[in-house]
Length: 470
Image 1 (cartoon, rainbow, N blue to C red):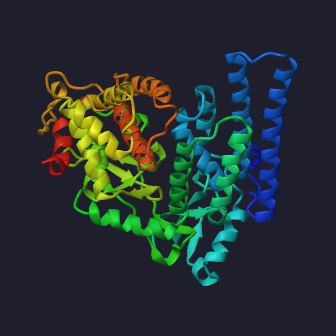
Image 2: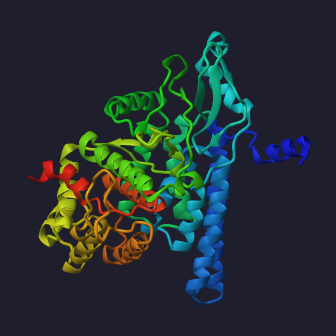
Image 3: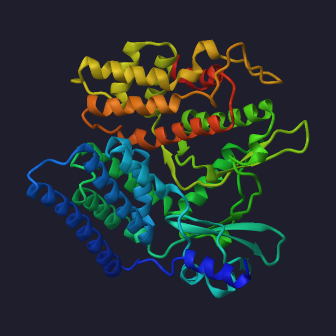
């Protein structure tokens, strides 16, 4: 392919700009709302004139077409409305038919980048020319997302590779209005119905979005993680630079490594993959039960693996994103630990009590709901059951009957159980505190599966929950 064709191809993939001014974005939202509503009204009118109710397949096909339309429009708008759509897709099974949620999940893939001239405007508003003259930035982004883009760069007076995260113009100011519009569009389009639990999920998403656009908060969080993991050589955390960081820009060292699903990682020996998996699980457990501060977006793109060339050194996990970090109260984590302990002990009554404490269960829930909740919880902790328990030694002994995280259909079984819970719990979503903690748990399980983890880490888990249960 010639350079000219390459440039033209790249240009077509880039977005010239995004609407970020209040009036301009409002006009786009009005158009989106009207079109969604008209499509739904037309669908209902057609069925009314035909004097019949639509079949299940016809309704599913219509809802899927609505979801496809919505995703295309959100990709154009970017910003918090697109990010909120991504977050909703994680728990879409509580609100959307599976055909709809599969479309919404496409929002989680990397989005089209925005041209440099739009990003440069943010830099010039954040820093004076003297500061900008100290740094070189490659104008081609290495990553594009819903809230911003990441570029490689260098300080001109240092031989140090940088990763520079730059927020899209106006994203921070649009969160509240964007969420109101998305909620209205989902209702008008017929994709969701009114539900109090749905409102609670929106409150959680709103809070997390405000966290994610505050790069000063992310800067401080990153420094806190550096301190917390300072003596743990299994983890690499980028160094951040205050002189070229602000509320809209975050400058840190560019850290080399392989992606989690790269051949270089997947072809490692079982022992090395087990050690990496233990590192990821240990990270999750320390975040939850020690720091009570959790990075809630376990996307593969937020991690790298740095492979060791020496037998006496461990492979390292590079942590890249600290925006979607949520703090939890000691009371909540204590109840969460009690819930896990009840599962490991197969204690039905304690599981129900913990479920009520966490807000999953209500006092007037029928026995059917209590039993289903317990069944799901016991299954979630399946890999930590006594029969799979392995010893952690020099060679990571995997035990007589280790749990095979790669070949288990646990996630699929839980998904099916969740569908049953939707009807048993009358479309009740999980409590808002649990939304992103659950997201991190499922993401961690997915990483363990990807690494082909062959191990029963019961003793590691017990080490973290015992202080809460003694």
